[in-house]
Every structure is written in structure tokens, then in C-alpha cells.
Image 1 (cartoon, rainbow, N blue to C red):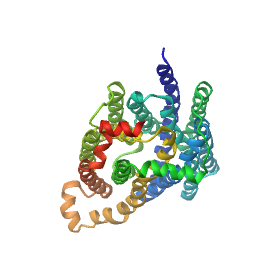
Image 2 (cartoon, rainbow, N blue to C red):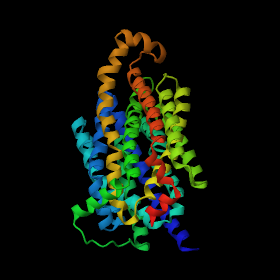
Image 3 (tube, helix red, strand yellow):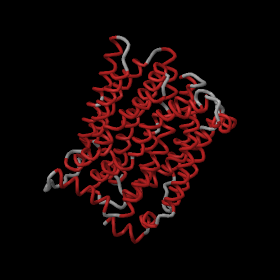
Length: 433
């Protein structure tokens, strides 16, 4: 067995730990979503919890990226996993003491998110440490399988567990999964030394180096900015899908449905893992996002379980193709020793769209679109005839609008020349040496 095969086997062990961790995190995410919506009846309350679980980690990602290039990346992954359990423990303690308040849930998810920031940049940079360029797309497909666990495996498990127990059991399971992840990371760390980088510059200078790696390559910078527009659209379906479904079903049905639609991501990720993509990354990226927008719009169209299952399945099936294309275009155009810093900045810029979507989607649904569809006015009379006028139709209408915006953004992305240059053979040769 050659060195590249040995490295890939070690990557698989690391990946298995992240798969287990993602499954546990998905249990908590689903359970808290159902709990908050059932207690408040507001999509905006659920969106607030989602925002606070996401934003601290995002804002700290640039600092975490610099740390990933200065220190042992596997050690940072272990610290991130262990310390992020503090927030979950905080929520669990308050729940065991009695009925928990919304602000206490917000504090707990914020604490967990702060320490999770250490994990993401270190994990992505570790992939570059361990694998050859030819293994990137295969590894990307597997990483997305692990990432999809919170959509594929967790919802149906959480939905079932909530029928026989409550949110506290989900929190306990999630806390224990972190220790499994730490164990797998420790094994890899002991058998695969981190690459040592010379720390000849200050923290601020290394941060600037990461920014230069992104900003000096016009194609990468434009792609990252465009990605923030894409994440804004996708953030609406992530935030509003559960309130839309809970308006006419229960947690068990929602969990089963989410698992069914997420199999689309699993199927595509497995295909990419077996048959790696070798060319046409920009075209594939644009097409996959365009069709994702169409399926997103269909997802919000009617309170029809069959339509939701089919459109959701194909929406998720488009994501691995888009994510793999984005991953390859960025990874092959940034030097390895700068990737921790670069991924931190890329994560910050590209995912600002999620922050904006989480901040406004719930408010728009609760206080503007849902009332308009229920008051019997012009909007209810025209749009309501097509999509219905139930309590969850405001969220459905917003998902439709976000899907249309995603289609338009994908079409614009395909016509940007600087992005097309990123997969030029000569261009890649210059930027990967």
C-alpha cells in the first residue's frame, strides 16, 4: 500500500468521527427547532436560534483559520469538539431544572457556536494536509456525506425519539458523540503528524496573507462574493422549511420527510465519491444551482407531501455537485500553506448570506407574508389561489421567491469570465505550484 492510500485510510477514520459528530449535532438542531416552534409558534423565534447557532462560528472563522495555519490542526479539532459541548450542557442543565426560556437556549447555542469555530477551518485544511490533489473531489464527496448526516440520518431518529422521550435525550446523545469524534481525531493525530509552518509573521500579518490569497485572485474573490448571494437564497429554505411543514404535520412526519428528501444529497455524494468530477466545474456549478432554485420553488408551492418529497429530494441532490465544484475551484487556486487562513475568510464572506437570511426570513414570514395571505386581500386572492392560504403559506411563498432568486444568481454566475478562468489548465498550473 503506497503513502497516498495510507493517508486516505487515515482520512476515512477522521471522516467517520465527523460523521458521528454531525449526526449528533443534527439531533440537537432538529430537536431544538421543533421545541422552539412548538413553544412559541413563531418562525422568527426559530430563526433567531438558528442565527445564534451559526453567526458566532462564522464571525470567528477568520481567526480560527489563522490558528489552523499556526498550530496543530488536529489538536484544534479536538479542542473545538470538546469545548462546544459546554453550550449543550448549559441548555441541558436548565431543562433538567425546569422549563427553559428562549434566551437561555440562545445563550447555550451561542456558546457552542463560538467553540465550533475552531473545528471547520482546521478540518478543511487537514484534508489538504492528508490527501493528494487527485483525491480532493473524492474526499469532498465523502465529506458531504458526513455533512448530510444531520439532514439524512438525524431527523428520522430525532422524530422517533421525540415520540418516546423529549429534547433532553437528544442533547445527551449529542454530547456523547463529541467524545467519539475526539477519539478518532486523536488516533489520526498520533499516526499522522501535522505539517509545520514557519511562524515568522504576526497574527495580523498572517490574517492579511489569508486575505491576499483570496483577494489577489480575482476569480476566487468574485466566486466567493457570488456564493454569498447563493447562500442567502438557500438560507430561506433552511430556516423556513420546518415551520412550513409543522403547520400541517407533526415532528415525526417532519423527521421522516426530511430524511427522505436528504437522500438526494447522499445519492449525489456517493456518485461523486465513486466517479470524481474531472472537468466543467463552472458549468456544473451553475447548472446545479439553477435546478436547485427550480426545485426550491416547487418545495414551497403546495402543502402536498408527495410534491415536497420529490422537489426536496432533487434540491438536495443538486447541492453536492455545487459544493464539490466550489471546493475544487477554490482549493486548486490557493497555496496549501495559506489554506487555513483562506478557508476562514472564504467561510466568512460566502456565508454572510446565511446570516442575512436567518435574520430576515422568520420576521418576513411571521409579520408580513403570512398576515397578507390570511387577510383576504389582493395577495391572498391572487397568490393564495395557487399556493393556498393556510398558516404555513407565508413561509412557502418566501421559499418560492428565494428559489427564483437562486435561479437568476446561477445564470449570472455562469457568465462571469473571471470565474471561468479558474478551471483553465494554464491558470491552474500557475496557481497550484
